[in-house]
Image (cartoon, rainbow, N blue to C red; front, side, top):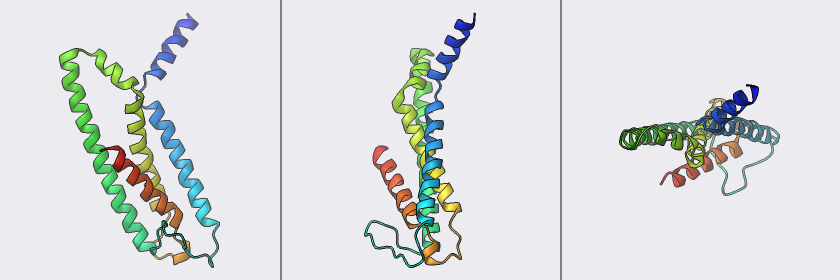
Length: 158
């Protein structure tokens, strides 16, 4: 009896659509925390020297991150809704077993997790930027990584 229950529970976990995306979101929270800690460790005398890093002020960083966040949320909503519509039409044609295949597909889980992780990362970094902060208090590396995450997501969704 216990063995059957464990097998059934493992099957539910294995076929869950949201387990891997949840783990990716937790990793995104950890990444945001780590990057903000790296940025906090920089002294006031440090300047943004690297060509790839964001070099704007606090309002520029807030505007950039909020624009990126809006775009990622819009793109995620569009991709997810188009996928659900296609899945619904295919399930009506081929049967409900297709839904189980969709849920267990690793590519689908990674795509959902990437969208969710990027959104959570951008929200966490955005909320740490005060509009009246001094230039050296802006988390330039965190903002640059948020831009890179969004760019990677845009390339992947093509």
